[in-house]
Structures are given as structure tokens and as C-alpha cells.
Image (cartoon, rainbow, N blue to C red):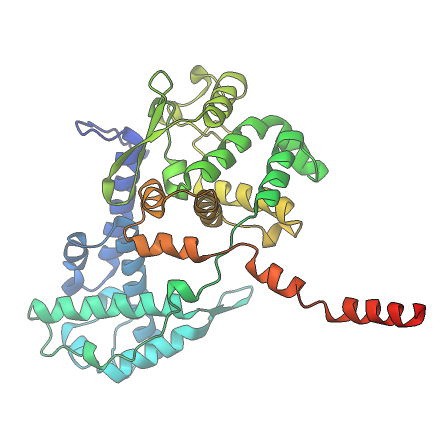
Length: 383
């Protein structure tokens, strides 16, 4: 039987693509929940109160993985052969030490397929999320009276580097200019890349300029529509995390590159399927660009600015950091930058204010031991 097309009777203020995205996430959450033991069927509803949709999805993936771990690695804890067969009483027998062993397992584990053995390595940030997922689940089950005790106090802590301890990675102004030169002229692209660039150069430039000007999140940019822009009023609308709407002002550069793309490169509406007709950034197939495609585009052009390999190029999140450091470096208030980038806490923005792009370079340039030695050597010979 053919799969029925999903249509939306949208009476909200949100555009159809935002509603569709939220629906797709909820469908994926429901599918994952259906794979879990029956006593966990309320977990997704429990998460809805406080957790963002994508985080809910990640938590459900984590819980499914925890159940798979119990089946494959801990036959002493369950007799189940499938996740949904795990019993409540088996969860009741799980101790904090068992969860700590699971988290340790997650640091490095193997998955064997018919053709290969995959080694998975996780950093402390990922481990902390996996621990959080399991912790929230056990608290919910205890709260609902399905478990006799709350074992989460016995979970080992996982130290995740604080924001201020992480090195901020962002492009410097000269690297931004190299990147924009590349997307404008096609310089430094491989022959294959140049072939695609001829068809997408205006789109690619518009994407990079939006990232650099507003520090947009990749999801915010990917969901932009043609109808998001009101050029008469000089503004456009984006949808932030937690469903917040935000009106952004257009400057001359952004207006120029967006109009150039829409008028001179983007497919005409009659050549685009109804679902993607309003999407601002289209793939060569005439569909809304995926986040993955936007991420690869970012890595390609930033690698040119950085003069490094494509693999070592920067993600869109580091272009967000570039916007933050550039705005603050131009003397803008951290509170204004906080509002533009939608940081929940001003302390996040302050990290970019404290980040001085060239301070390390200036320091080491004052310590040119070998050059100074050669200068002294030359001076001694002259004397």
C-alpha cells in the first residue's frame, strides 16, 4: 500500500515547515518509544514538560541503547531478547553500580556487522548526556511508583569542561575575507567543487553571510523561507529554540546577497515541489537543503579561509562563534550581542568578550628565541 502524504491543517502562527519539522521529531520519538518496555511508555510525555524536542529524541535513543546494553552485555540483569520484553522487576534489581558500569562501557565499545567491526569512542560530554538520560528515566520511574528506590544518587559524576575552559574556535577577519573571496570567485576549489560552485555560488555566499552577520544556529538557517523575508520593512523572521520567534533586521550586505540569490540563481517556484516551494535554500534537486549539506558547505569554505584540509574546516557553530567574537571585537555591547545570538545567559556571551583573538600570537611573537639568537650572532660577527 502506498504511503499516504501528510498534509497539515496549520492554524498556528508558525510556517508549515516548522510545524512539519516538529511533527517529524515527534513521530521519531513515538517510534522509539514503541520499541521500549511498556512501563517506559510515559517517558516521552514526562520529558515534554522541560526538554526540547531534539533533546527528547536524543534521550530516547540513549534509553534504547541502555536497554540494548542490558540485553547484550548484562544477561545477569535481564532475560529479555528484545528491548520491549524487559520487565519492571528487572529494572527494580538494577543498582547504581550497574549504571556506572554501563557509562564506563560507553567510553569505548565495539559493534560488529557482517563486513566490519566498528569501534565507538565517546568523550565526557557525550557520557554526561547518556548519564543524564538514564538518571532522568530512573527518577521518573521512581516518581511514578514503578521502582522501589531512587538509585540516581549513587551515579558517578562525570566532569565536563566548563565553557570557559574550552578553547574558542573562530575565524579571524583575514580568514573570513579569504573564505568570502573563495565563494565569490571560485578560487582554491577543486575542479569538481568548481563545477558545483558554478551552480550554487550565490546560494553559498548568502548562507555564509547570514551565518557571519547574525550568528544563526544551523537549524535556524536551514528552516528559513522566502516568505521569512520582508524586504520592504528591512527584516526577516527566524524561529529560535523553544519555539520563540525573533525578528532580525536586514543590513545592505545581507539584502544584496539574498536578493541576488533569489532573483538570479534559485529555482522558480513552478519548478519546485509544493513541500519545498517556500524553502529559501534549495539543493540542486530542488529540495530544502539538509543540515548535513549546510555543514559540509561550511567546512569546505572555512577550510579555504584557514588554509587547511576540508576535513579540518569549521562547522556552522564555529561561524556562530566568529560572529560573536567579531561583533564584540568591534566594540558592541555584550548585552546586545547576547540578544542577537539568543544566549540564555550573558555569561556565555562574556566568554567571547574574554577571548582575545591574537593575544597568544602576540605573546609568542615576543619570544622569538632562535631569531634573536641569529640576530645576536650576526651582530657579533659584524663587531
